[in-house]
Length: 322
Image (cartoon, rainbow, N blue to C red; front, top):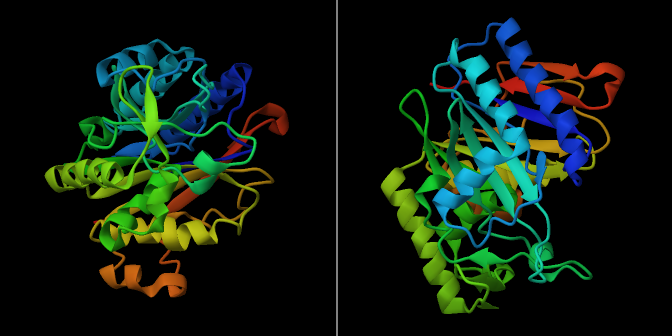
């Protein structure tokens, strides 16, 4: 299931508290409605804000520090609350972090929390052009080990494997099937675990993405969770639906692909529209270019919730497939 949220990605640490309250409310309402046998609850990219810089850390240290974040206890509690009717259900949440003193922008992460802590995490590996070439903005730095990190794929309760994708990572699946294309030029800067970085050359980029391709081959994910930063309003997500969501499903052999995003100027009023989900999209979809269709998967159910005073609201939608 997926949770879309009003407003924009979290920009300040003090905003985390309100978002923790909303997550707790969502978990309570899911229990009240007796939704059962859920694999995961997905929230948007940048749902929480961190003051850490995770890029240079190895996977185990990233997980340890994420478990120490103030919002982590709320995520663990939500997963525990859902565990009874949905054993093993994960809370999958986007976390953006501060800009470090390296001259680059902060992390963009997607973290899967279970009742005991971090069960998987992914750092963004396929930036958009604006992420690395935006005028007046610090560029996004990649790290060598992230593309092949097995933590990007999480075991789900009912035998599926879930791929964690941070925003534009969703477009990488089609790129691997169709490429290499000019889109890889957006991968401009890379680092190892030290404080050194270098321009990302063509051969190095291709080798980096080959690591991700091998990870997909080994893990065979059949569900993809895509945390999207956001859209201005309902209706602006159509390009994403056609090329990002449906394209990713087609590239993964028709795998269920579900997205969650912020909507700056109000959520879809009808839970069954603008769903950001696809399933069983055929491989031919990838060859249609600008003629790709939306291939939207309709949710089974949905509801809206908001905190007192309407300070922040969420649209919660349930997706189910065979």
